[in-house]
Length: 210
Image (cartoon, rainbow, N blue to C red; front, side, top):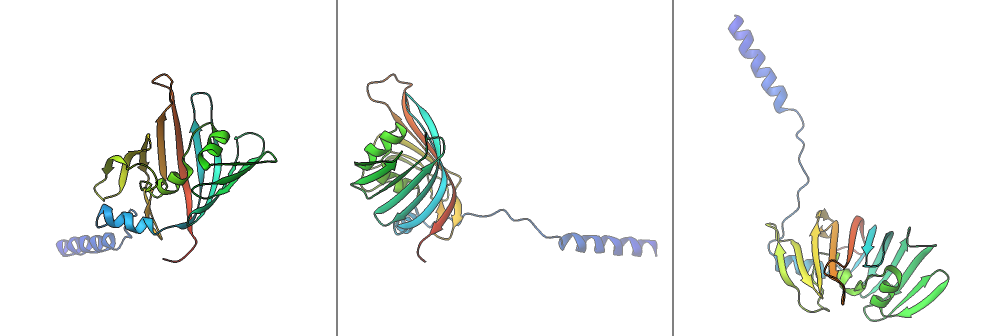
């Protein structure tokens, strides 16, 4: 009789354990191939992101909160925080841009405006591709492409920038990086003098249904 009770108790405990809810880590849906992932992310041309941009040049460094809206080739960047007094707004496309900063309007190519604002020659058009984890088709071909086992890019070099991609997360549009970091050797400077940036993306919103 005692043996029967013990066996019954063990069975009941085992059943109770099997009914406990299991915690499942969120999974990244692996693309079938890097080429298919590129095609999907290339089609993603309307979005909003929020995050924090850090930047450093041989002469200065800083950071700012960033809100970026992209609609095909047109974009609007709102930067606020320790840039200096006030905030900055940049609107433009892949060729021309306008920046409102400290009650002054500047008209220059996007990269020159980024240089004026941050001291770093950020290629804004290329950055719109890099935030998707892709090389820009408007820059020299990327080299040293490294992919993780799931096919997503973890690094490549383009236009002199050495780039790394991490913290991928699954979104409604597919897996996108949560952290992009880049470094560029400063011309005519010591070997340890480099430009760099780090973009931490906290939120994605998509302007049209896939």
